[in-house]
Length: 405
Ligand code: FES
Image 1 (tube, helix red, strand yellow):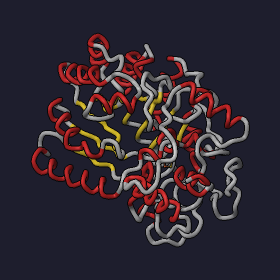
Image 2: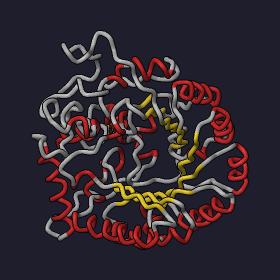
Image 3: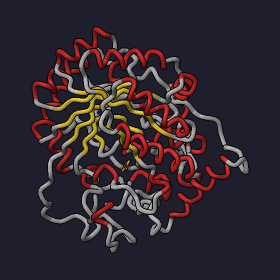
């Protein structure tokens, strides 16, 4: 396994004169890990309760200023639930003054009429509201809360305040059969965009993979439904369908390249080259409390580690498609092979591709009743997070490891 804890020293992988690094375009400010929902597919780290020392308002303002000076233009306020921070409006106002295009990524819980007005006044540009399903029963089950009716009211209020709205729904085997109803719901709510994002298996979703993984047939049927709606309603609502890469033969160009456009900052100030980077053991994440964002982006080992093509091993190194997919996803490579520098096993040229096939086949057998689903859903909550963090501190991997895939 590649040791991620030391800067690159392998001859030929770290050029003596580093080429100029293009600026980040997108800053994701994960303001807090606190969240009133307990979603089974949350991408936050399993041990999020171990990283709860949140940046202050002043520190976040500093991050926004530095990121804008670096060149970032788009800003997502996320979490957890960003509305748990009562300085959200202050941060939005600062971002607006700096010239960011701002997006609030929210469950809707806490988005009162008063806060909507304040966020509008602060200059917020866009709101992304999550639903778990088109039915109250499944929405509430998957988030382990009673929030469906509230989200409906919040969607109406968002439109009344004149915000453009993206409705976001994470897809998996439970709600893929409801895709038509989810689209109908988005149309009825007046959403300009609908993001149907098939589950990516990191964080809590990886923990619940056996429960959430759909069959190929479910996906194909849902995609056909989406195509039909695009033809008939595409002028009213733009529908994005984010394909799950487990069913592909080539990997996704994850994050559009490591350290290429995306810069995340976690609630405790850790800087993230991707949403799931915290799960890569040995990768030392720089912290905005200790380093400038410019140093972090341009010089830190964490952000340089998989930037470009020089880090690649075979079969990626000699692959004619490497510039297209950039070797796929580092986190998926780690989760399924134990080495983040391996080819993403979604690629059928990867020697570990069988690990992906195994997961897909297990989902098919489970759907046909041939095989029982291994374990109940583990919901994201503080008690479960503490338990996983304690197990991790005791030497167990934090969550299911590649050997369990
Ligand atoms: Fe980390 Fe893909 S999620 S590189």
